[in-house]
Length: 407
Picture 1 (tube, rainbow, N blue to C red):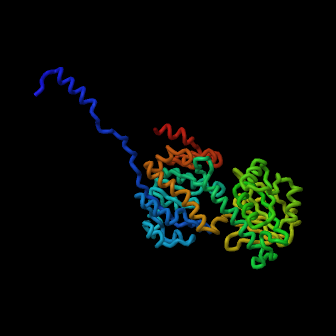
Picture 2 (cartoon, rainbow, N blue to C red; picture 1 turned 30 degrees about the vertical axis):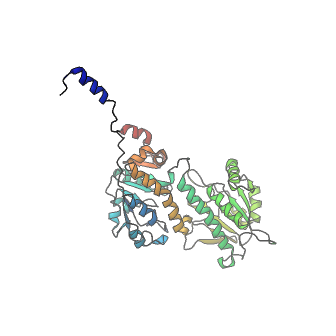
Picture 3 (cartoon, rainbow, N blue to C red; picture 1 turned 180 degrees about the horizontal axis):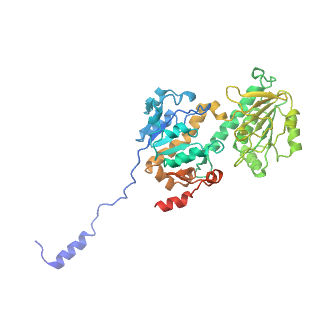
């Protein structure tokens, strides 16, 4: 046995140079999400927030998903499709609204909020124009964290849900116009587009945002002649650059617009207002001077519409005729292609929900992801949206300051 202090000291120094076990950082514990998918009860809402393929991905990642029976019926998904994907099928709505995370398309109704026990997360659309003040107050009373999926931003600062639904609306608007122009759609028997030797269909698109861009793409792809109007030169320039071809563009000048409308076979109204009503840029006099049998599709109708003669219609009775012009004014145009729209929503939220689980839950994702945080309008019962606070005269707090105070 070695007792000499000098020798012991030397051996200890030598030992400290030997390879040692590497101390790795402990990974953050994954959170197991408990998600409820209710059946949509809003008028003519046929979309579903998550398709079976996305449910399968979530279940494979260790999460639990409950789906109310017949939730996917409007988008042609059966209960069996969800069951095979690993979801639990529930026949009682209260079970769905007791889940930790409630994920739906339309904003919740008063009855749905009443079924929520509280301290949960709600992810849905936020429709300020139809969102009553009492609903916000009830969500706040129940300490709900409410996230508007149409206000979530991606890494490049784009609103992916708004962009995707705009693409669907713009393309579908052109498809509907083509159907209405045909003789079997009570139209003049005109083919939307153009072929050799026949004058192409004249299409006017009012609005150069996402809806206007994809309506233009669809019309050009069919061979139509397209004119695009918007009050923003930058949007018109961006549209031309994105499409990659020259189209007629103009700022909205009444005389120029009226002349274009007189020759148009199809007019797509795709103007959007940041807040409030869409500006009405097409007067009744302009519509009276349009060709008999021409078609108006007012995609802006959910914000009041950009045609003076517009009035809200439904998917069951989508059109009416005024001054010889066929009007299509259905607010929720994406529900007409509900299966496509459901897949589009799921493709956006599949990685978000997986990331939420990997980061430890919804709260952690809100803290770590500024784009996701941008969609939060109520955080644990505290209103964080300045717009909603001013519109409904409610007290609100900035989400950034709120999170700093909770650290």
